[in-house]
Image 1 (spheres, rainbow, N blue to C red):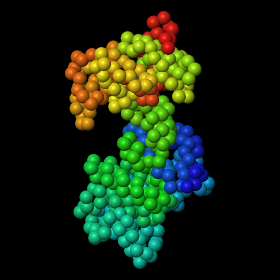
Image 2 (image 1 turned 90 degrees about the vertical axis):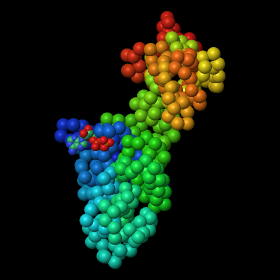
Image 3 (image 1 turned 120 degrees about the vertical axis):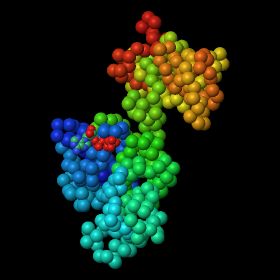
Length: 377
Ligand SMILES: Nc1ncnc2c1ncn2[C@@H]1O[C@H](COP(=O)(O)OP(=O)(O)OP(=O)(O)O)[C@@H](O)[C@H]1O
């Protein structure tokens, strides 16, 4: 795999009129890599994809493929194919005509189109459907026709704009794996826009998380899930429980001060740049362990909060509890149900406790207070 220099974006910015949509996008994508662009609605994912495809020009920066500047090349000269969320199939054309459409535009001879279309149909499991119109296909089949049309022109780079979002949940799971397997088999470079975290996690080699038009973090699925670089990324990756604590670095540890719901404790710093003072602490409900208040099992480093169950529900597989810790509510899962009102301890292991020094932490009301400004280790 060419590690870098295959598809490069340098200092890319984009705006619609006075609205800045993308700022300072630097990305280097290797040949054969599957990159997911992940972010919430309106963060600029589609704009970035359209810019790569050549449908819009950046207001600053450059796009290069194999060191060649393609920033101002038209879409059909970039060796890229785009698959839309809506599939954008021609309703009056058959499956075969839709798949062959791009080849026909390129002036490829009919006999060659027929061979290529047949190859795409069998690659995508569409044999026998060539004479059907899109209206006589299932959502999953339509999606595959759209993919076939994109792949038929033999692009070096496949751009996918939420192509699975119109599929029902079960088919989506299958198509995710089919698409990923196909991309690997063809060795094609893919950039996949999605707002679905799990989809990005299971499909991509690398996830690029966008927040308000900027790259918030990029890394392997494991990196962004287990080592979020900011409170935003932690929250976006499911660490929705938030508490504000006080503490200070001490050697290779971060000493957390005692507060109304927790005793003083220490967690490894793990190279994190944390300043003394308030920190935003985030963790996932499934990472926390709930115990009866008088029967806490502390397994390794971490923090234990004391509180009481406010509500319990069963989403499947485990019981989800809302626990009240002082003035704050968090969610924590357990294998058994604790009745509302039960005093409980919530243990969060150190590796699942994401800490950030942030302006919000400084202005929020902390659950953990150093009584005399002093931090207890
Ligand atoms: N043609 C346009 N003119 C003006 N503003 C636009 C235009 N297209 C998009 N925008 C704005 O640019 C921002 C980014 O839009 P974009 O479609 O890239 O977001 P997105 O992350 O793909 O969102 P979604 O997940 O909802 O599709 C949004 O605030 C949107 O309203």
